[in-house]
Image (tube, rainbow, N blue to C red):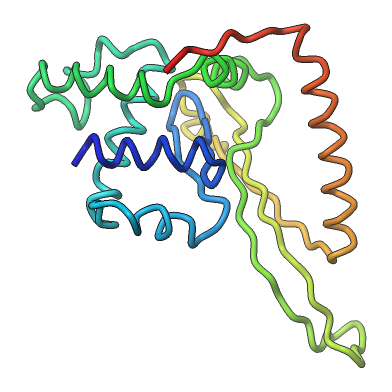
Length: 207
């Protein structure tokens, strides 16, 4: 079942229906761009949602250790301490072959060395406002609320121990036209990043 779930994860990452969110050194998560993407990905496989949930956690934990360059310590850590070492080593190498790339490693290292808050997740919903104590609405207003999650601390010492928060979030409301504007700006930013990739070339790992 492990290999079947790994194949599904590789598939949804490759077709951009899911994204690997990195929050070093704490976790690697798999975020789906559409809530229905997972169900669609499992339709033509032998993997149930329950099996996917169990193996997904193992696979992403292995990937986190690979990215943190501590893969050799996995057999003695956490959920893996009672696993057969030979099987575990084979699974770790399967995860490395399926999901690891130099580009992903560079993104992990960039975040791990960050001196400013870094993106860690996105949540959203669509709402309809029909009335408000401070304004009257002749026509209901449709808008989206985006919850932008970000990581504030990146060291191994948990900032929460000192009364702060390692992760935080910011909620912002957008009208449809504002979403169009933000998308246009982000498209331009992405274009600039792509055009300047030659300044920091990455050699992809062949799979």
